[in-house]
Image (cartoon, protein in one colour):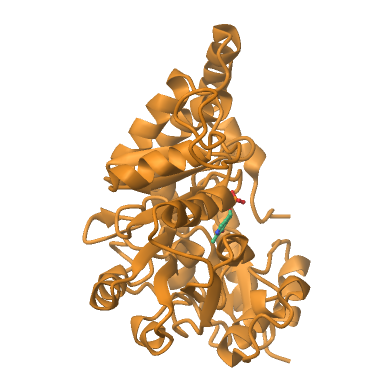
Length: 373
Ligand SMILES: *Cc1c(COP(=O)(O)O)cnc(C)c1O
């Protein structure tokens, strides 16, 4: 069976370096807010091209604390509207509602599954203050258009970059487009820790300072509290492991893109809609780092069973859209037909930096043998 994601094999590649890094931290006697976090923050800010990186406990906190910081800074207030794609992962929405802001869901672009500036524009009201642009499946949202729209309407832009480490348009990477960007280093993400971890990147000095305080009980100095903060910190151990894996991220990404290119060329089954790469060509992919390789079919259940029979494990991202979740009953009265059909039709094929050629061929052949019933 080809597993959907073999984390054991992924981390085994770096085992010696990971063990050395962990040992260094264990032996240092310093586990929170030390040199490893500081070094990782500098290295990741450099990687993204942004001025600041603030390590936090996870990706959800990265988004939640950024919106919270804007509230503390007087840039957002309770009830303000935040435009967000309806087909995103639940965490994007949770970050908004946790801050008592109002998510305004918009249907995505049908081909890229990302926010579409024209559709976002129709959702702007007197109360709109921000756009949460999600780089879904590893592909950058159309940031040039989104930034122009935001500028015209004086809106803040928060990127949800949890799936898009290193994705770029014209060389400018995720984490350096909006006013701020939230990253997750959940183990299965393109840059994955060996536990929970996250970060915010931004070029805004005051925002960086405010987020740092909010994640550390609300203060810059021990025992002095400016805000009613929380405890959301990246720890030394995870930072040391992330430093090891960050060095390999670009080469890992190229391996993912090679798998994607092989799928795109090899899968010749008209019943499966393949991912569309919007801002670049498949031979020179910049904007898509293929966190997921998502195909779409009206026969999803049959396809998943068929692939299972041929030894290919697949997953669904995601089975239930946020507006259909029990947690959000009554939040949005509207229906989102496109989002619902996407959630009924998408299927994620295995993709990672450790898949070998035989496995890639097995997936392709299994897809090509699928016939519509
Ligand atoms: C993973 C993910 C998050 C949340 O990250 P955690 O580290 O799991 O909290 C947020 N948004 C998107 C799009 C994600 O994929």
